[in-house]
Length: 114
Length: 111
Image 1: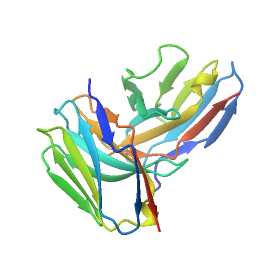
Image 2 (image 1 turned 45 degrees about the horizontal axis):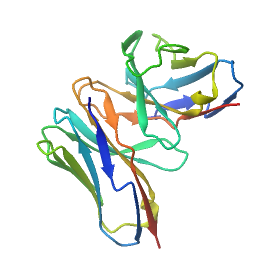
Image 3 (image 1 turned 90 degrees about the horizontal axis):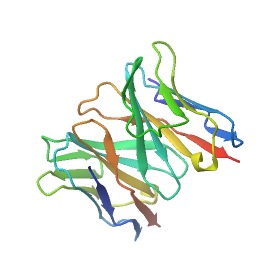
């Protein structure tokens, strides 16, 4: 049973470009969470999605960031017009239910904005 | 708003010592508390999950306890080994099911 998969593992973008981060949850999991980890900071929640629905996006910056989890395919975190402050590790986690469920994390995508 | 604090921020010990890592949270209305391990440049590995109705969980040399009333959880590592060197994170999940993470305890176990 494959774990949570994220790609790419490393992504370099120039300021102003778009970054697309992909997350495939564990088999059987329909709940996906995205987190951001900045250097010297803790892991911060960004968005929680179920298939085709955004459940909670309270941690998502209001501009330039969007997320989706389509019926088919991976969840996508999209960052438009990246700035240097977007450089961070982005982690995705999945669970089989929201309530009291254990979250399983992917290896992360390390985004560097030059 | 839930806040999670981990003490100490860093710990360096010789191999073989028994360790206690502390995690405190401000809102006791949690559904669960989860302990993770993160190796440098890697993702998080789940170690133990304690539901709000439970007091502790054990896995091998690891034991985690939960005291909701005092807003505390501890992770006990027995007979530490160099391979235990990593950052340990705790996360408390409340009514929104969204976990709040502490900033972690960075552990180094030297031979």
